[in-house]
Length: 455
Image (tube, rainbow, N blue to C red; front, side):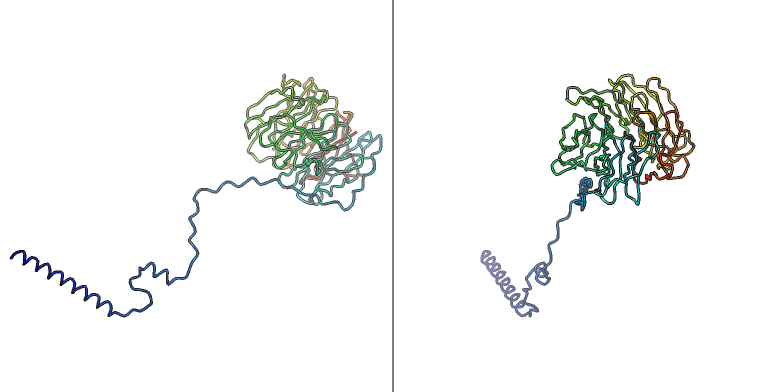
């Protein structure tokens, strides 16, 4: 009887559930719909159906710092094809010596040639050298470097922010030839020195030059053929501060530095690669202006401590050593850090002319410099002051080809910015303008002080 009652209870529960389900279905069918979308659809699908299509949301960008920018390439230029062949200058008059100098006019560099008599006074006209093959702006002349025979001058110039080029000047006819061609592709190079024979120059290449990439090269200036020179170089050619040939052309001495205030090394290498010798190294000092003496017996150089102070110049030491690297000795304090103050050997290799400031503050610009010319006897170490000006600029001393006179660029009259070519005897007497009409002025606003005296 108990089982029967349990079964009857279960049956009544099932019937109640069924009746409830039927009632719910009837209620749902009785409610009206307001759209064609099923009320059972999910809210997400309903939103997607009612909104227009949109562009996909981009992936979040990386939060890593951006990669450093690639190195800005040095500027290059393509010379425009000349419309006419530049007219050559009148040929040189025999028996006269020649000056070539750089100046600025209307923001652009200019080159001039003038001849002088035996007393170093202007004789004849002043001729402007045609530089129209260069870019029309952003050009700065870095230096003038005469060949050993005085027949040619290497004109080193910079285009823009570090595009280094070299042109070769034929002094006799005044024509400039770029040290580049479709065959040789010698470009973007820094001048270091002439070979003693005068038929080749030593240059440093840049990474922007596919042929002379990051190396030292000996370039034939007539054929544009180039051969590598065994110089221990870093990836930056400008870390080679200077280099010089031995008078016999068999070896090169050069200075290099790897970073700011981290010292320098001076090396001597044989061109035939038979020998390579570290002559000396100095900590913390920068070595520059390495120059072999014309007689081959000594090597001169300057050394100075680099500074973070904003100045165009520095006071360093002029030193001399024997060609083998021994007996390094100080000759005198010297002004350095600028192309117009590099020490220069006399033609016989017995004396060195250099510039020193007058004890006042060096200043941040060229026109703030106060300086004079000195000459040191290498054998005795004696130093003589040749010019005795007060608070004026005296720069770029150069020897006459026979060593009997010295010329310099300066403003002994004290007129700011009015630099002129002057000459004097080696005892400091007979100081005079090369051009008494005061026509040979040198504006250095955007050009290094550059002048050469040729036979």
